[in-house]
Each structure stands twice: as structure tokens, then as C-alpha cells.
Image 1 (cartoon, one colour):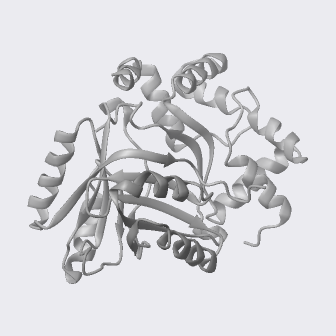
Image 2 (cartoon, one colour; image 1 turned 90 degrees about the vertical axis):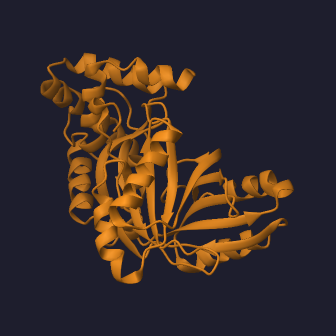
Length: 162
Length: 157
């Protein structure tokens, strides 16, 4: 599997670098030089490694991670029950919304799951209403988080992903 | 914090990909039409206001070695939600732990996103968690197809 190889190829330095940039990409004029100082690498070496990790697809993006709620956005998780024959069409229609960030088929009675972010509750309800009416959708369950116990996707790359 | 049009412009750009060049913030600042120092100050302001969680990378977990992930819903008695939610949050294999509403056909009020190296490992993790809290009614939902996975574009266009 190609995917597995990308992970196997990661050197100890890459893992250390990934650990660091996941949690604290510096907010300074020369962030890559700063990362290099912590890892014993030059600024150029850090840039070259990050470029390679991006080209390999290990890194999707380096940038700001914003809290949608603090900016007035609302979000939810939605479970859909969709007739098997309509699944692809419904999935495509759902993915077509800008506010849909994740959309997966899962093996369950509720077979399509997506996350939705919207600028207001009104807009969110409007989209849910539209999705519920898509041909082939037999049930929609709105599952907004009522409480967060843990949010964050930091993985220890040095422990091989445990 | 009230966001001005300039803030929205900055956020729209900062949530995008930073260029891999020695002074990425200077490049972004130039695009937005402010100085690098102003941009870095804005980032500190957003962080202090809780708008910016952090500057960092988004990894493709399956490429970084996390070949398997699954959503797991747990049917937890209401009086145990607090205890179980906190305990599940302590598992390194769980990246997200939420309480969500239930329905007659969806009784699972605690959600965990589980990650591992294989489907077998995910099942083992779920069984361990189940045994630890004595909650046996859970649904482990692996994704069988990814239709979309992206980051939200706030204030785009």
C-alpha cells in the first residue's frame, strides 16, 4: 500500500519536526529558523523537509486553526440514512455545500455522516432542511455537540502513531 | 471580539496554506496589505480572544501512519456522562470526545474518534475502553468511503 510507505519513510527527524509543527508553529518573523534551532537543523533544511512532507501528502496544510464558535459560526454532525441506490448522488449533493467539511460513508443503518459549519443557526437549519428533502434520504439525525471533552488532533509521531 | 472586514480578510488568508519561504508571515501580510509586525500582532490578538486555536499543521493521518480510524458512539447513562467523558478523553487513541443528543434509533450520547494502525487495533481499543467503564452498548463505525475532507473556509469570497 502506497499510503503505508509514506509513513514508513518518515525519518526520526521528520517525526520530531511533525510533532513540533502540529502543536506550535512559531508566530515569529522567521518561523522555520526557529523550528531549526529547536531541532538542530538550519532554516533551509527545515524548509526542504517540510516541502518534501507536503509533496508526499503527509502534511495537508500549514496555517491557522480557527475556532468557528468564537467567530459566531455554528457546527454540527449529521447522520443520514440513505437508500443504497441513491448514496452517491446524495453524497455528492451534500459535499457540494461549502460548509460541509467531512463527509463519509459508514457501515451502519445511518450510512452517510457529515460535519457542517454555517455562519448562523438559521443557515444551518436551512441546509439541513434541503438535505432532508434529497431523493433517497429516509432519515436525518442532527447531532450537534452539547459538550466537548476533548478536541484536538495531536498525535505523537515518535511513538509511531499511538 | 468584533471582527472587522480587515480581520475577516486576515483570517481568510491565515487559514490558508502559509508559503514555505523563510518569512511566510511577511508574504501573507503583503497580500493583505499590512506590515508583518501588524499581522503577527493580529495573530496574538486572535489567540488571546480564543478565535485562533493555534498556528500549526494539518496532517493527513492515514499518510502519517494512522491507517485506520473510526467513529465510536457509546450509550452512557446520563449520570455517568461526566466521568466517562473525562476518562475517554485521557485515551491517546481518542482525538475527539463529545457528548451529543440521542434519538430512539440512535441512543449513543458519547462520541469518540478513534485512531490506530489497523482495524483490529481500533476494535481492541474500543473493547478496552468498554471494559474499563463497563459500558457494552457501543457502535464502532468505520468509514468505508471518504466523499469529502477539507478545512472550513471562513469568510471566503
